[in-house]
Image (cartoon, rainbow, N blue to C red; front, side, top):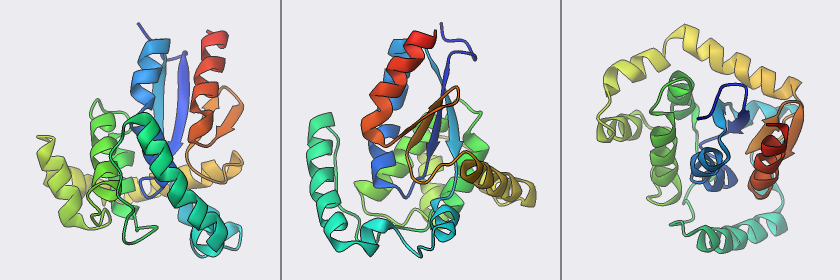
Length: 202
């Protein structure tokens, strides 16, 4: 059975398309490796702003953006995941991330993040809308109104801000990012490498 010291830290954003690929895969990979996933939601917006960007680099650099959307089709086919390019990108994820902050230590964190990712990248829904978040939580048979109220509490808002600041201090510049101890791995295509390192550490 996994133990807390055999862990991979998973820094993710629900508005991030490459985080979608990792959210849908990480639990099964970690289970197979006997690892605990420590879920670390944070906001990419402030990270990008610190770099002088007002949106995703995929929007700022048209050639990169064109590549990314082609790559997402290939990657989703590779992993057997459904995919629809969102009509708005990146979407505001503040409320969804605040809920993820509440969920991070709860057993429903994986189910919640997967459902929110499907809402964004399969169903093309506004994950920043309270109605969407409530519907996702209700579908998971969770006390939706109480969770959203907790997510919007000033203490939880502060926790997410502090977690985002911590991400910047760690040198995180994008999502998904993984840590095994002090070793950082960036990008969905590095998830397997992070898992392998964690196996060796164990």
